[in-house]
Amino acid sequence: MNRLNDLFHSKKDDLLSIYYTAGYPEINTTLDIAEALEKAGVDFLEMGFPYSDPVADGPVIQHSSEKALENGMTLNLLFEQLKDLRKHVTIPIMLMGYFNPIVQYGVAAFCKKAAEVGVDGIIVPDLPIYEYETLYSGYFKEYNLSNIFMVTPQTSEERIRKIDGLSNSFIYLLSSSTITGANLQMSVNIEDYYKRIKAMHLKNPTIFGFGIKDNATFKKACEYANGAIVGTAFVKFLGEDNYMEKIPGFVKSIRPFSE
Image (cartoon, rainbow, N blue to C red; front, side, top):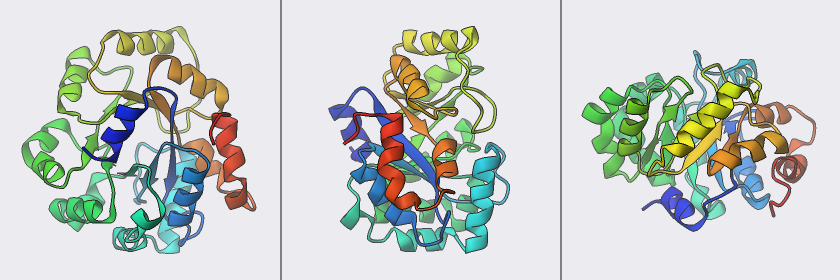
């Protein structure tokens, strides 16, 4: 059991997670933003570590990655910034990024370091299921890290069942197969996708992401899943002046009852 498991055992509905890129907009704000989001009532966090070729990211998050790299963010620096994480933040933390930087760091070393600083889960969009299962799952289990798999509207039921069997915290449901930041359009196809996932009665909780940007899209996602992740909208918000003091207001615009 890690903090993610504890969260999903204690709270079943209307869970809110926020994504942001470590090292953006400023190099030393990673931990400050995490603290502010927890105080604003967010349930868990997704910290992105920047990469020079973020193929699944839309222009807003791509820009944040480029800026973070320009600021000097690296995996080594991120782990250094997070060394006192658990003195300040109690909610679950996930790291999200591409596999190339993890391989360069060393997969075993990455998992070990992530666990040491208090990370609970890892999201690696370009890590194939087969490679995870045959080569790397042992490292995740050794260090009590959840590997978060993604599902799109095009994912087959067979593959979803496979993912459900391999998962041990939650499944990340992409509301579309496009890049991050795409508008969440409540088309008939999306409604059918939501209903199809819910009807499968998966053993793991489900969280929707991509296109969740306001209270309306958050509420719609929560009709069919346990919660939702806000990414592009928050990263865009971080470009505003005095963003730190405005974080509580942003969270309330997504989920008004956050405390």
